[in-house]
Amino acid sequence: MTEERARWGSRVGLILAMAGNAVGLGNFLRFPVQATENGGGTFMIPYFIAFLLLGIPLMWIEWGVGRHGGLRGHGSVPGMFQTLWKNPVAKYMGVLGLFMPLVVLIYYCYIESWTLAWTFFSIKGSLHGLTEQGMRQFLTNYQDLQAPEMGWWVPFAFYFVTIAVNFGVVLKGLSGGIEKLAKIGMPILFIFAAILVVRVLTLHPQTVTLANGTTATSSPAAGLNFMYLPDWAKLKSPSVWLAAAGQIFFTLSVGMGSLQAYASYLRKEDDLTLSGIATAATNETAEVVLGGSLAIPAVVAFFGVAGAVAIAKGGAYDLGFVAMPLVFNKLPGGALIAMAAGVMWFGLLFFAGITSSVSMATPTTSFLQENFGFTRKKSVLAVAGVAVAIGLLHIFFYQWGFLSEWDYWAGTFGLVILAMMETVLFVWVLGPNPWRWRQVWSADNRMWNELHDGAAWRIPNFYRFIMTYITPLFLVVMMVAWGYKDAWPTLMMEGIPADEHVTRWWSRGVMLLILAGLMLLTRIAWRRREAQGEGA
Amino acid sequence: MNTFALLVVLCAVLLVIGILLAGSMNIGALIFMLCAWAVVLGILVWSFARLLRLPPPGNDHTPPPDSGP
Image (cartoon, rainbow over all chains, first blue to last red):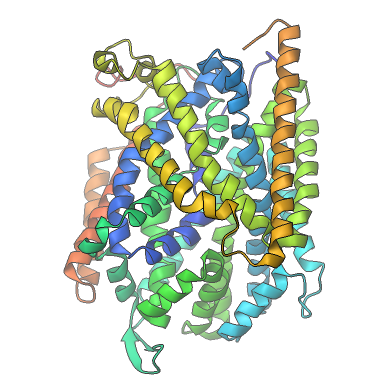
């Protein structure tokens, strides 16, 4: 338990791995959908405000929590929380930092396997010539395991390949696996995205058929106009602000437990202020500059603004797996260009996905290694076994909303709760008493000093105020608003078809079992530590 | 690596993109888009230029005199 911990091989590798962790499917699928549903340009203003007040501070907090715990021999959140707050409850609060990455990893690998499958289908030409209805049916058949044209076993095959690649990378370790993947995957992702952006933005104006049957001319520039022309009246809507803050949250992968796990491998003399902001900027480049210039301008060019809004209402999967292949089919150049664009689009989604999913496997594997003396191989195989066993439930019961439940409770609502807890512990418990104004600005502010150990750049002083007051306030508002607006209706399954209720309850039960299991493992781990005289 | 020179190059690239899109985009949307890109890419270029001057993680180093806490 006290053996030398692994280290990052290079600074660029570390930043790319951290950015790979943050850059995921959400940058290219969720962001355009959220922006479109919330008024395009209107959405972008609160989005940037949330980036400055919520995203960047949380990024620093997570790096700080991770390094603080890592220096004390903890690579996962339960131990990190215990080092921040010497109360026995702290480690159980931190179990969320094991639970969420594990739960999200399990279903994320399944979605990731779709991107691998669609890359293959693009090469094979299966998507070429399909109409909108045909494209949607193709996706539904795949999800429902009823695809006569390919066989029921195909989704399973792609899922197992995805799992094997993911855990193969994790098995190779921090420097030899995760860092190497980031160094290969991130440049490929950026190159593919940049090529697609140039192709989309150089499209000529297209004639589109509107819903009322008339025709009009549309272009990628109309999509950019939509993305960046604010409607000031809509800015008063709280839901736009909530959606923007939520997107910043998900895109940076904060509140998950995986950024902390990566940061735990840093040393006291390593910089985290400049590295944290570089990670956030890399993610925002992928999201705003590339993600924002890809799907929406492309879809607007071929379907018009109203068509793009209608597609966005269908959700991220409709945009990524139905609308985008339709756009590629319409590109000048025929089947070969459609294939190339499809391979680049789904390929970049795969790399965005896998660089995130390997990070989600890290907290649990570290936890098992550090607390139960597992070898890396044994811990990776244990997590892979759990992921496959439970992941199969997602494949079998996807059509009855099994995955949607996990995505909401662990992949959405849970993130805000963990972020709130870590902010309070790192900023208020480790740091100054928030009711004592002078302590916030004093040289003895431990939170501030912790962030600046080994710092290559000094964070502007006004961030002391933002991190102590504004970020927690932002999180409380989000938690209360979501609890009121979404969580209660979701818990009560309002608007969910009755035939899905039983499966969804089972889905919740499995989640609770995982949570209980992790709580039990944490209890056993700390008993072992106490028996060995290690404590926190 | 000269951070200032990189930022100048970035501004020039954004200016060219702005000129190319000026005819087809609404001017307000174009300015907002270029400002958003400038902020994001500016932070990216500035932070990476500074980071690449540092020694690899794990090696002892002393922060520049004007940047430590």
